[in-house]
Length: 231
Image (cartoon, rainbow, N blue to C red; front, top):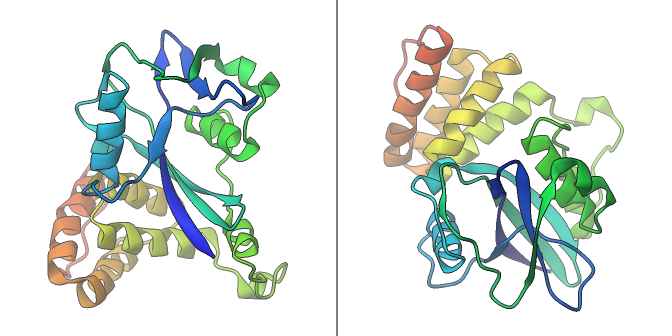
């Protein structure tokens, strides 16, 4: 079973959300496109896709919002959502139908429910879903001990794991948000520092050194004392 990566953008102008759809389709989608082999990384890909649409976003690497997973025939679609800020330009649809919609109109629009929920959550109008079970189901895997609290990570543990993964991937903007979220779930500064220590061991010293000042900045903003260890 294969997986594909898709990049999508939440583009808002004067309180309205831009959506696209193919002429023969009834489902509305966030504007975006696939990650292609020539793209250096997902941030560069999102920037390139926006540029082809006539949208210039100066700090797209800081605009990452969420990754969701959608089951598709023969595989899994890894759907990365960005929310460009301070963008300029005049978006073009390039052969697609386009529309600008109020957020309250989304409930009545035909669109992927998981995407709709993610958009509303990005505006604080809903909660982000834990789609681990859905991902495993799409991959044809059972969820071990589903429903048994002793076999599932709690929110704090998941947030610490996410800090390590994002740090290893070298995503400083997303890492800043995740470190703050981890603190909100009760993760301690020492636990987050240890997570970066694991990153140093398994993903390389450079990844940990890049992530460390991001974590320091979040701690400073939150008034949290730094642990004594360094990566």
